[in-house]
Length: 559
Image (cartoon, rainbow, N blue to C red; front, side, top):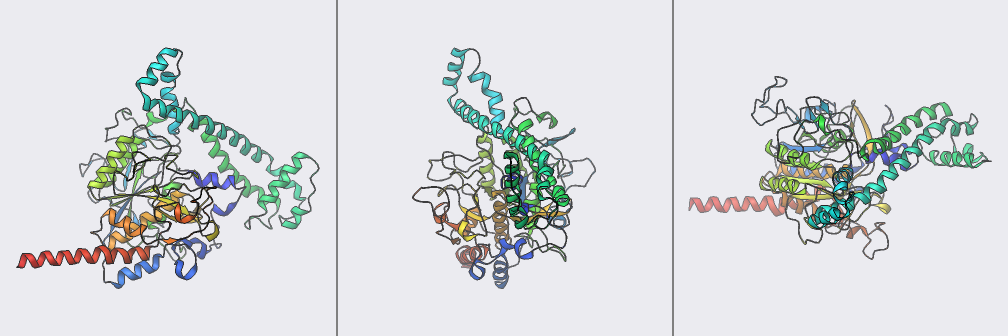
């Protein structure tokens, strides 16, 4: 899931709406739309400010809540995050000693399970690639009788292999096609812009162009697409070339990474980590390189949870008043590995995180039992897990998205009660479900803003990203805010408070011809979270009830 935001840019014909804004061009209303109050603005924001006003009006004093961001890494000294980064007070920075005896040396802000003494994993393969590589010779080797014997002996592995093979075949082909397409666009962008004949890019100048060859027709179609972007209108060819090439370079690298590494059966960077990869129970490996090679995704996620406003930046996270970010790097450019995910969960739990954000996922999970054990471990420790539903525009009961709290998609209930799965919504009420967002009436709990979300990125910058990766930290931040003011809330109570208080909609969810295709049917809750309403619900149903029970217990003791 890590790089969805990049592909989204290029699959929508050079829309620069997700890219970084230049200084002086900030649109504070757009930057913070996801905080809005639906009741007064008709925008499905999460009502952040009113939630804090309500909680503070009750005389509640917040405690700090540590939120574990299990992701690609975080720029820990970003001005919008630095003072809200978790600090392990038991470690002496840089002394090369495991001062707190937790098995991890100099883990001051968290840990990196994607690195070792020789560096850090940047691009890794997709899980389907690893499964095809591992099982191809087992199930489809030169000995057909042996193949049949193995298929009968390992039915679960064979089913996973066949699923992986199908996905690998389709997506590796798409990656090659996308790479070639992006390379062609890069190579021909100047020729395309030359059709403007020195005129600035406007609807009028594009309309005046007459295409005489198929190649010119293709270039004209590109101009018709890019002129739709307000950021590009009025600019001349030289400036357009610079802007578009920078954008296209990102798309080219996205597909190049897939074509050359993520779907390459012979590529395997795991040796960098230096662990015994086959030992899923191994715990103590990695390093403290919090940022890693590319912390764009994790830094953006962290800003949504706990980004700090300033005199020049209005953007702020849902829980910026109360949360500290613990970074646990477990997600490369490619698919996360189950062993790292399980260890990341345990590390965060053991070091005090009470909410974990997991903005990642994949279609197959060979070591899912290890991850499920970690889910259960977190539940036993009273830790809430918030996970993204995924960006495949799929019904995740039919197309599983791991990790998941359901051991079987047909199970009536999840096997743990501390996981909340989040779909992505937009600020367009007519298209409330983000077109990429996965969904399901049972397996997705809530929706939250996840389209065009403005937040922190590396090099002290800010940008708009989209994905369920952005929706999940909105919920993680909301959960942290509730827990800060009402620290006795259990994960199940937080989930109930968020699920039962959503702002619902019956707009078409754009999921096809299914009879149940309205927005209120594509998640358990049927709507978008409202932190203010959730705070009211938690206060009335749980906080006051807990106080009443405590009072009764005290009176009994006195009697």
